[in-house]
Image (cartoon, rainbow, N blue to C red):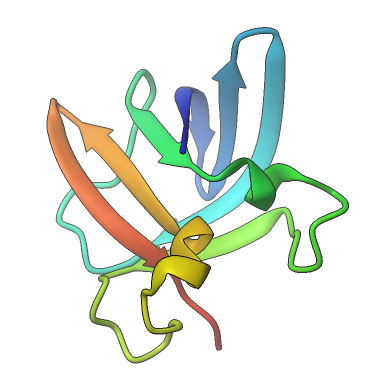
Length: 98
């Protein structure tokens, strides 16, 4: 997983920074008390940001690891798991579908 700093948030639109790269994504988060905000961090697979990845998108939803709306978390689906760092608290979520 790669570390991205949240540069700005406007509703579901998140601007993420990593070194000299900036990413503009539409992100929705479920099953968490506090949403990520400016200067928090998201750790995610680079595959989710790779336009050549079969399941690439600019709009993602993430929720609890045990949610029925995502794939079973296994080694081959680990790129769909992210970690949020909000106020120094680590929260693991998986990509949701449907």
